[in-house]
Length: 116
Length: 113
Image 1: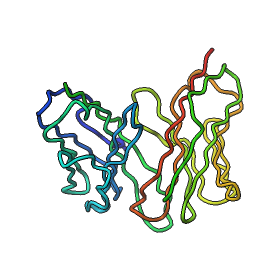
Image 2: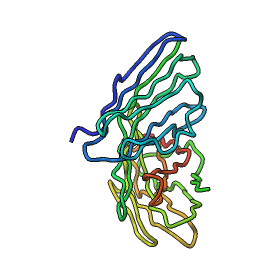
Image 3: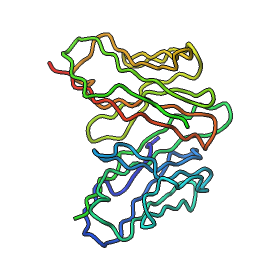
Image 4: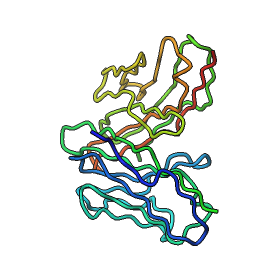
């Protein structure tokens, strides 16, 4: 299996621009998580989905952030407009959720976002 | 709410030293417990897991035992190597909330030759 795939791996953009981060979860997984990691705040859960439905977006920092999961094999995280304080590494993770299962998460390699 | 508290870092050890990273948790139910490792420039990856009291998870020489009475899941390794230098995260997951996990703050380990 290719694992969780994220693109792009690096993104440099100017303040005010729209940024779209992409994630392909592991085939067959039904839960997907978006995280942000910075030195100051550590690892933060932004939003998560189950069966393509958003379950909890309380970690999304502002209305400038939005996420979608149009199907089981694709999700996007969009920032519009971007600001320098959004600079971070964004991770996508997936897992197989169900009764009796062990819910370990599989992380992608991350997208390093720099907003200048 | 659910929470995980990890030993603060950074931790610096010499090669072949014994490693312990403490982890305690608070949970409303009976969680599964995990240790994840993050190498520089990479995402987190599962190191080991345990699903019930007294279970011992092990992998790559690392071990952790699920202690319900002390709500702990301490990570240990008998002899660390330079290649073990990484950030280690303790986490828990309940059988709810789509498998969401609660992570500790991470502990940075540096092993010197």
